[in-house]
Every structure is written in structure tokens, then in C-alpha cells.
Image (cartoon, rainbow, N blue to C red; front, side, top):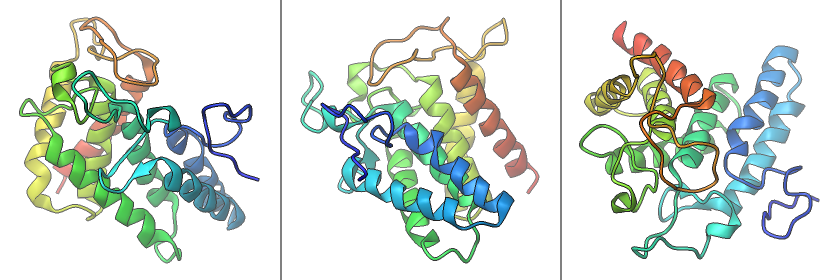
Length: 230
């Protein structure tokens, strides 16, 4: 039986027990259905997505806890801990699931609804500089735009604009995010201000980069190019 608990679960890396996994696994199953014509792969991803979502998604916050260790933990300022990159993995995973999912798939509306909930939440907490803070609901914890989470958000939001899931009135916010990300590319051509491998918010520095941030930046750039073609 599926067990999406993280704490104390010896099988936690077998199931999708942490929110990052919703980018890493289900879109591949959806793509398999697209390539093979076999619905069973998408149906499996659909079923397992909502088991993880039912456990880790906070409907009142429209954000995902990274895993169950963060349900009751709070920042020093007493705020819930919603990690930027973790939620970036999820909303980017939603964009990719919807890309590979047939338009008439029975549960598509449920995925679109969660995408919209997260997108509108993220747009409402975007900082004036265009980026997002590593602790989404506690920007005072570390008041500096973090590139990896912001790159995933920019990709997913630009994708939503290109596919009609969010209103075009949000385009200036997405363009501001893209411009701010571009400003984080250093003289060596690397995207800086990237939090290193982690599971929760912690400090990062201008010189730090990583492949997952570069990949998200390229995905965002592709969607921004498509947006510019309109």
C-alpha cells in the first residue's frame, strides 16, 4: 500500500513522500502514456499525485509542505515553513503533467485547479524585485531573491500565460521575474544566488549555482520566448 509519510518511513524514497518528487516522477509517467498510447502510466501518476497532495498540500495556504516533518515546525518569526524550491518543483511538475495530459482526460480539471491555486498564491507573494524568498511566507527570514525556486516559478507562470491558465494581466509580474533572474547571471555565465541541495530554507550566496537552477532557468527562457512571440 502507498505510504507517503516521510518521518519514520523506511520506504519513503520508494513513494512520493516529499514534494520535490512531484516533478521528478509523475511527468515521466504522463509522458510514457503520451508516447505509448497506454493510459495506465498516466492513471498511475494521477492516483499517486493526489495521495501525496492530500498529505502535503495545504489548501488554506495553496502551497506544499516539503514533507511531514514541517507540518508543525515554524520559523523563528512564527511562520509556517513553505520552501521556495520545493514548491517550485511542484508547480513546474503541474505544468509538465498538463503538457503531456490529453485535453479530454477526466481528471485534468483537478490538476488545472491546483495549478491555478498555487499560481495565484505565488503571484500574491512575489517580492517587488520580481523574485521569491526562500521561505515563502516569511520573507524576513532571508530577504534576498533565491534563483532556483524563482526560476521554477517563472517557468510555470509563463507556461500558464502561454496556455491560458492565468490571466494576461499577470504578464508584467512574470516579465519582472524573468528580468530579475537574468540579473542574477554572473560574469561567468552562471545563474547565481542558488540555494544548494537542501530540504528547507537556509542561506545562499551570490557565487552559488547548481544544475537544477540552470535547467529551470532554461525552461523559463523557452516559455518567455513563446510569450514574446504573441
